[in-house]
Length: 405
Image (cartoon, rainbow, N blue to C red; front, side, top):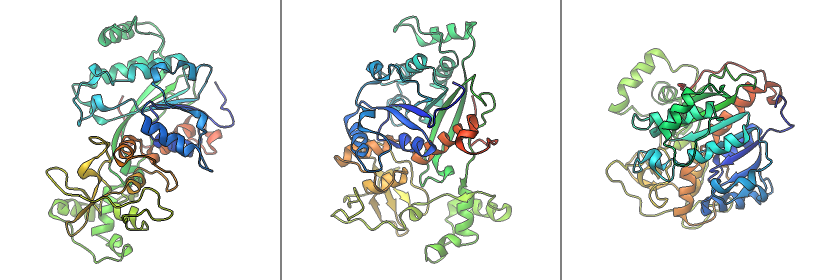
């Protein structure tokens, strides 16, 4: 596959509520199929497929377990297979069962890669996957991706036995595999959200051996410089200038001496919500899913997200209610819950993208999503790197946010 079609195509596994799909659409990809088994998330995908400016068709949305999706994918030849295999087995908030957890969907995702051999693969997961107890399994996932032709003997073959066979195999590598840890805030998303991304580039593709990641564009140093060195941040929001808390005093002094570099400031909750109307008990016209949620309170380790920093990671939480991470903490110490709309904006969902359903369910959909801006940056960078003429730019070397493989 040496030439791209007029618009590169993608199949997304574990599509969730559409965060990665929206980002990849922005990057220039067309969706052949969006597969999601969980009904609340699939309903969000179907609902937004009916919009006037929808980026995928209702026919592209399939509420199906990917292990039974062979008929949907038969005959498709996507340029990219993407998705976020369920992260609960590897999440710090979960039971940490890892590869033994029945929710581990990496084997099913890799089976689909084997069947289709796309030029590009993009998988997202939580940083917990890199912890010492799980790191060997992550290495196994990457080993499989490099040599997908060495299949498991049967469903009961132990993963470490399969790993040993792959490593001993004389089968040639088919993909170059790269691993990145990216904090969404470093790409201008108003949320500190660290995630692991695995990228596979088929070796016959341009630039397969030279991919170096994507550049960070924003930094905490630049934010602290704007807040406590120049004061520009407070001036822009028409507030009295403030002094840093004890926690940041030394950091600010370092920034004052060394400068903030050439990056933009992290985007804060105050920046994000500057033009968002205050929520009320009734939905405001033009602001879907933006209704006040009562009952916010702080408790140990759940103190809310300071309004003058990016939001803490928006999580699915227990039954979709993510507690303190989904609260704003104001300068006077008061707190309130982010509305569904505000949480969606913090993830990069556009204002006209709607979330039908109960709050507990749609907050789970939002919390499980890939941040739209991160998916867009990765998708665009991959196209620019492998097919610069198609992306309309000259391929350029990228400074990686974090790379190790």
